[in-house]
Image (cartoon, rainbow, N blue to C red; front, side, top):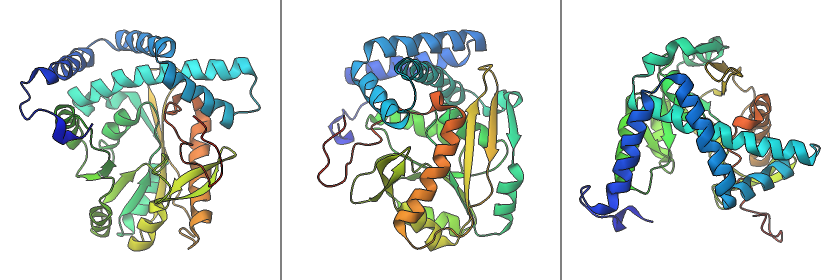
Length: 304
């Protein structure tokens, strides 16, 4: 629903559930870590049982992308995905309602020299992020090591959008609407690093079809366009929750060489391939709940 159709006053009863959710996030942010972990798992399991539409989407994605897994292994991955995303909600609450510095001790960094080398070129950097369940935690913790702007999608609910924006602004230099190409280019040309996640379906007009886990996926052309317009190096950032569910690892990969090539399909295929590499390290932490294959090539039936 469009923002304009929401009441103007945040005191309106329409917003009371949102206020309740925000209050719950503040409470959850200060719970002991083991309690957050337990609660997050519970939320994930409840969603796995009750959110039938999202479970169907996740099951479809997993079956398409991991056809070599047995039926039991696929079911296990679907369940683990919901659990990981449930934990992700509590991680998001933690960094939206607390100082990221509180969690510095939980992070290990690998390959930070690659981003430092890219920044030293003075052309700005396009950081490719991936939609993992700990995405917002990763963004906040990234600010402890490197400053960056971020491309984001505004929330339809104006109250929640304000809450989300205020939280993210504490950790990023500037937030850039995902459709505001001009600002993203301007900020990179000014020498800024911009965090951008291209692994979702933005529709046919903005995309080309390129393989993603063996499936043709509508892949946004904007990644290569920004790199071409700015001349900035492109660096993939991997961020994962470690198996202990208490610590995290950042890993920056070397800047892509010879990118962009000038061919949209070639460039999209290359970006999808490095995103696949990131996902395969911890596939249960990826956001399989979204409709990655919503847009289909001409003549193909809908998947979901």
